[in-house]
Length: 423
Image (cartoon, rainbow, N blue to C red; front, side):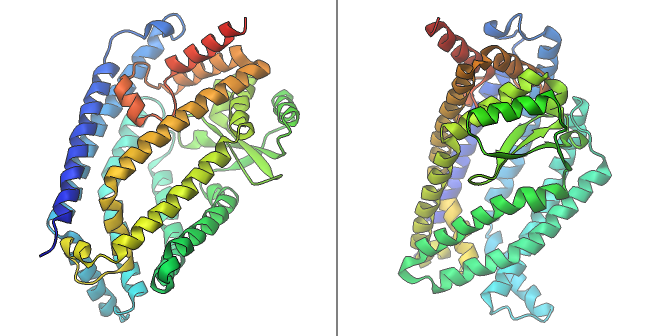
């Protein structure tokens, strides 16, 4: 008699759905508050607050519908044994097109191909509504239907190009790994992550956005001077045409060792003055100088190794596979089952990582403040909050559980308190 692993997984999924929906309702109530938080009064205009509230409430309403559909679909797939049925049908399809379904790699690729098609179909209505209704209604969407589907087509092609070799390698490693399976899997994913972090901004990202060198001028000179003062090995400074798809703004860094690059969204340059942009970069450089990026990377690697260790236990549990409706123990199915069985740990881990991430954000803000960007960083944070119509009122429980960045009120308070202590 198989143990009720499946029932326990579904039960916890439903429990977490109700818990997170409760937090969503708390946040929804906060978003509908008619007044700004007192610390933001006189800083954020009433017009921007009204626009932000309308945008946030729209997204919240959409989120309720999306999460309800998602939990119903996920539970249906598990309870009605859709996964084992689909695994069998994918094998039948492989035979139909003249392939050997007994080859686990071929069978797994056929299965994952079907899953990808199903995911694209079920996600498409939500993506279209989010982009062309909600984002467009509030002035953020800049892409056309043609560009939307062109990006989707490119993403599918990349998945078909990159996915099969990676999946094949993972299956072979699991089949041959023996007692050191977890270490081999971790080693493979470690190398893969390094390769992808190197190639993504060079080969993949340019397929979707245009990268141009930031022109000579005062902004470039200020950023280069700041980077040099911190001994940041800046090699290239790019502007990305984010405005072709959205008016949301951002900035990021990438590269290894002495080959660093900084990328500014053109929307960031449009929304902030030069000093405010430099303050944002000072914050990002704070993450680098304080080793936040490296610490996060090491943490992720440790978690990944532990996860693969857990997978080896699942891999050897025939009762667990039978509980989910499988008579055999395919490698890919083992990973899917493992992801479901560790849902409690994943939620706890996500919460802990958010705590660390918020602490890092406060530290990076303080780093920029100590460099003399106290006033301009506060101005930049306020302006980005306004331009992106980010939520002004947040529920403390919701933000503590979900947010990887502190709310604006908390960041401004922290900057103000730090400044007072030094005066």
